[in-house]
Image (cartoon, rainbow, N blue to C red; front, side, top):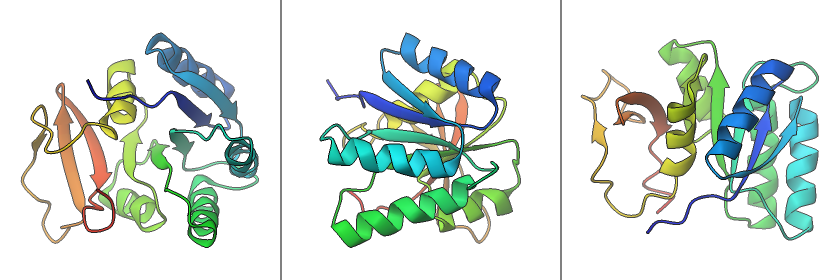
Length: 171
């Protein structure tokens, strides 16, 4: 059986969105923590690493005050690179559904991208999907988007999850 991530950090400046995601993840048997902006997220992520209990995934709202999700993701990726750390799986979450927004999220280091509103099944599938070993038999890739070889749309249980294909750098 595939192992599932146990610790998930939910980052969203809107408390209702944060509480909803936390409740959905807790029902899915994940241990959760939350932050209400990118600066707090980076600080909690670093503290978790130094405390020996790193997060397995981060659900990161893209548009937030103080430090937005893109800049927070850049800061996390830079720190991982400098410290030689295994990259944490970061799922971007935004109301923006345009391909340019997805590309921008991936270019800034996010691994997957969900659009709001996001139901529990989609959220849980996105978090669990990072640990499906080998060729995932329960997923089907859509036809490639014109000119976007780096964007992959996976249909998991009938829901759409955009992922960045890092097959060249991540197993």
